[in-house]
Every structure is written in structure tokens, then in C-alpha cells.
Length: 141
Image 1: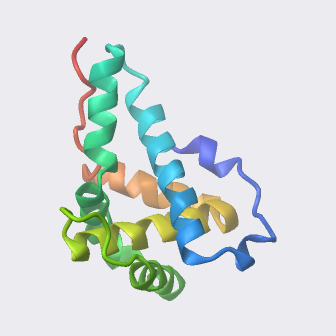
Image 2: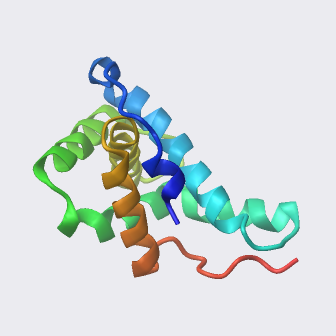
């Protein structure tokens, strides 16, 4: 399922990218992953868009992170901490704790995408097998 990630090459420059930039990259990677996953099934663009939004929102990312936490190594946990601590308050109506977890998740995803895409693919596969990327069925046309 995550073979497109495995083909990425590590970026030697990523060590100089800050946590919020990594989160920005990670957010794009997570959304693309979900678009590829859900786009395999037929459906109207609006329904596909709503299905993707449901799994890329901050609360869904925080939930995905909670499901992954038992499987993360010290480096990944440190990336999450750095991202969470850099997150700030977030949007006015958002829960700061959820926003921080989501930013930590995105930071880890961004870093892994640039430095260890095979590990990122394994984590995405774990989430998919655990059912954390709901909805599990594609939207109806």
C-alpha cells in the first residue's frame, strides 16, 4: 500500500529543517498518502474529498499517533516532542493538546519521509492494518 513512499531517497539536508517545516512536509505526505489510498476506489470528487478530510484533520492525526506510540523508537518520540512543543496554540477553536499531537505526528512523518521512507511506509501500513485510517471503506459515488 505504501510503496510510493519506499521509493523516496533520503535527503541529506533534512537535518537543517526545523520541526514546523517538517510538520508542513509531513502534513502534505499524510494527505497524499490518504488521497492515494482512498482514490483507488471509484467515487465522486466531493465524496473522496470529504473522506480524505476526515482522516487528515488534527483530531484524526492525534488518534493515529496514539495508535502508533507503542511502536515508536526514541528518535521518533523525540521528533514528536519537538513538533508538539513547536506547535503553539493552534486555531482558536481547536483543542491545543490535540493540535500539538497532530503537529508532532506531522513532524515525525515529514522527517521519516526525508530520512527513512521504509520506516514511514511500515508505520503507515501498521495504521492501515489497525484500522486507524478510517473510514476503511471508500465513499459511495
